[in-house]
Amino acid sequence: MQITILGSGTSIPHPQRASPGLVIRFNQTTILVDPSSGSLHRAERHGAAVQDIDYVLFSHFHPDHTGDLGPFLFALRNSEYFGSKKLRLMGPPGLKDLHRGLLDFYGSWVRLESERLTIREIWDDQLKFPDWAVRSLPVPHTESSLGYRFTDAEGKVFAYSGDTDYCEALIELSQDADAALIEAAQPSELKLEGHLTPQLAGKIARKASAKRLIITHLYPVCDDYDLLSEIRSSGYQGQAEIAEDGMKITL
Image (cartoon, rainbow, N blue to C red):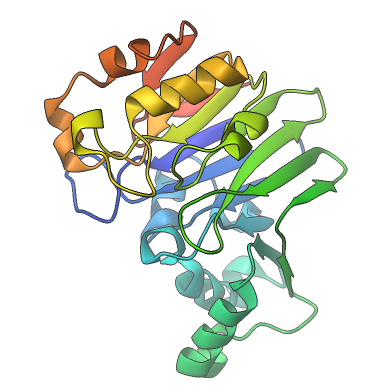
């Protein structure tokens, strides 16, 4: 499994950190997760071909996690580049409404034939596919937010928090994970409701015995703080890192 971080920032523009997004590549399957605006171009820039993407997964439906869905559907209508490629969308309840809203506004420009597009709403689910599996659990951010636990055919585990506050669900998803990509929006003294801090991300990783923690979804103010020290203050002793755009994680 290889994970490429397409954006380690937030909705607030930052010269080095784009809005969220990541690509996960398994043996035969490529997944785009939380496609913020510009994710498709960043994927190509960082070596993940958009025409190889089989699934798009969403943690929730804020604009900085969904902005490239419309452009992706629009791009897929270009048969010279994409042929008749099929796409599968998965995410929490509300995903079908999001797609319907795009159709209402853009009409035929983003409408794919029914045999090319599959939409599946998930919640507390365990799904298995030939070369990967995913566990989803609701987390406290919006009324319909999910965290994910991905497992490849060799048993390697990658956890992804999406946007969330502290919760037992994320500890469960991160249990014994080879790597956990956990949001840490702002330092402890500036904590936002519905978001984590580096210290809380470290606490989750410690309780879950995750082998490696990478914090992401960092607001610009994080540039002024020692985020790794905050992680260590939680007692987490595993490998700790700060996400960067274009970062690759190989498990």
